[in-house]
Length: 258
Image (cartoon, rainbow, N blue to C red; front, side, top):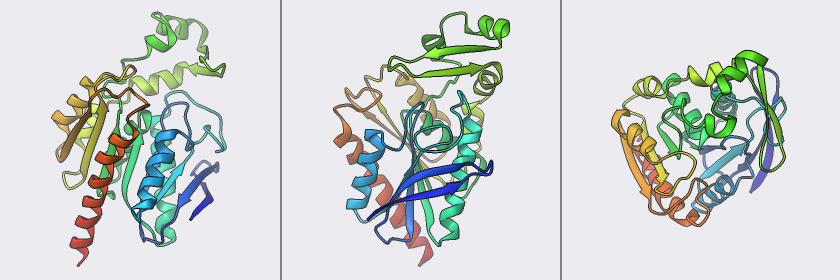
């Protein structure tokens, strides 16, 4: 059964999500990437696959994305981790326990940051997250983005799909100061982390996945041969890696509680 749920974050904004409810008390929360939404193919497919396995899943829009309230912000990693916190606390309040969080692309960074700050999650799935947040900016904003930000205080960006957004100096500083290396060292070693990355990822290089593997204590790495950043023709392979990992983690949690 799928139902829309509204959850308020600590800034008073309504976050909209879709709950794939199988009746199970343990749930998996799915987080979309940059300028994406809960309707992204990967989010919908994984939530449906989990539901088909009897596992409840919740996919939602971060503030300023999709149907959720708020204005879109570039960077915003810590705010999105707090949006995720609001979601997890909501489900705790209705007697559902979030066992795993999964994020794609920027969402992969958000779930790792969440696990580094809050030690209440048994498993994290980082799908194609970026290790070095200083990289990938000039490809989107041009070589002299820092000079332009200093001069004007902002950069207006138009995407290939015609969407406009503003990058402020403050939001850029937040991104550049978000240190994934440092954050990953703070993840509890009891928390199991799976990183999945496509070997043909054209947006975030597969090397980033190898860096995560070096520093996260309880870590498993899976490279999907030939997959691009969106897993355009590799959705089934992605599911075949993610589902067994999550089922294993759920089983482990069940065994602990016996």
